[in-house]
Image (cartoon, rainbow, N blue to C red; front, side):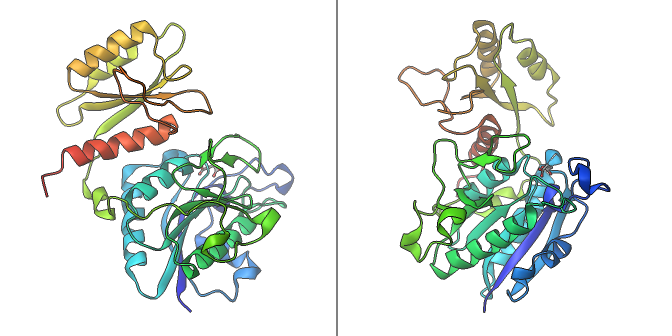
Length: 324
Ligand code: SIN
């Protein structure tokens, strides 16, 4: 039987607290992924291998951790004895990592992210069931010849490019924006065969893991349009840049359908004149920002501002790449 490789990065799924009655008092990223697997008896007979890539609270996610994760994925997915990979992650930046991995993944094997809202020591911890489901999804997808990146959370399977955190506390904290899940394991069990999923699996046409090889990503920041947004922050960001780390891009989390306060817009035009790329997303939870004729700045479609930031980093990396 081919193996499923589990890559641990930390998060609440690996968190511990000293008082099970107050499970919200805990520290994330304390248990290694081997310990997490030991808490899932249903996986005892599975052919698994695990590796701890990082041990962080995902609020502290950074380029170097993404690089280590990309390298581990590249290695594991290239092995003929590996069917697919599961990544355990914190919930807070899972949508950024999932989007990034989907943009990079270019092979025909499944990559499944999972996480938990309650620490491993909570009496009603959601991590063990999520990890079990994630391994089973990786196995089922591999058997059906499906690749791409998905997230398995609370019994539902979300496309990696669409998944996002929509609740700060609820156990069922994720959705796919306007996109329906690929499967609801709670209601329907594991889909049977490639046709059994309610939507097609994500494509496997990413840019390749080597895109992460640059030491420093281009600097892209997220700013918000709001009442009294007078552009001060944009001017400050442009003035602060150093030759080693100049501001290269800005994602504006605009109001409504990506609209921007007129004073902020004036500052963005000044930034643009200095070579800063500007993309528009929205601070509104649903609907996204669609392109319209005459738009001054590209619209980020359904991406959250945090996902849009990753997309702009990759687009800028692509531009600075020597012609192949
Ligand atoms: C984290 O994102 O690492 C902490 C919060 C969580 O996993 O729910």
